[in-house]
Length: 295
Image (cartoon, rainbow, N blue to C red; front, side, top):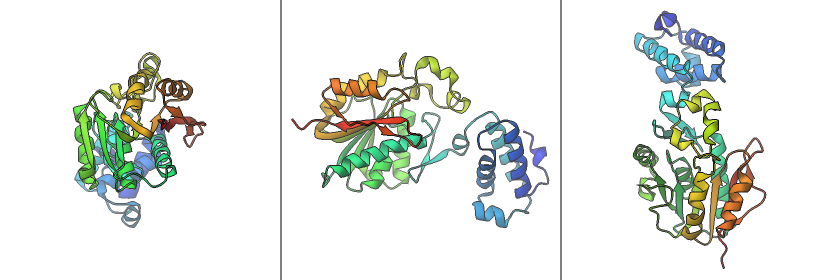
């Protein structure tokens, strides 16, 4: 998209032009996406854009907006273009090594908090492990909600670990969060009171059918769950049981249709799973959760 299309346009006119182009490209939320990009380049919130609606874009704003729009017209997600995403009310930086945190994953946070709070007076400090932490989204949300907790996140990607560490520092949680390079639980030494994870769970053959913003921009190894989507859960099952304190809890995100199989894997390793599985906002069983028996 040449910035000539934006020449001489006001903030409001530029927003309308981007909305038109995004709608023509059949992007999911053209008006919202246009507002977010215009707000990013002008550094104005919605109120500011309304007040300054008739101000002309500067040359720098026009060039930046044109570049952003061109990227989005190639289905690059807004979060990747802007380099950040809100999750659980927290603003998280992203990188090419991390998934874009999604609303469905907040279900893991909700389930984990319910497990912690239903156990009565929490242990201090509550010890949390986040397996395959990516941007650190789940762990940092939990540490934000549980100010006496400490946590460790593992990931096989050094780039993801750098991103998670930066997010922890930015949120003022760095002193309570540690991140280590590890293939799932390989380098962890428990015990932990809570283990959470959003591992790769997409069936390998299905990756080509995913939406372009996921298929083309999310890191493949954060998506690829092997031939049946369950490779990560098999790798974690035995370790989760051995790493948890008796009575400790776990909450694992799963893909559509996977909850029963993942629950069976956890049960075979000696863990108790809670039924029903925790659903997301669409009613899809999204989290397999439960506890390690006390005896």
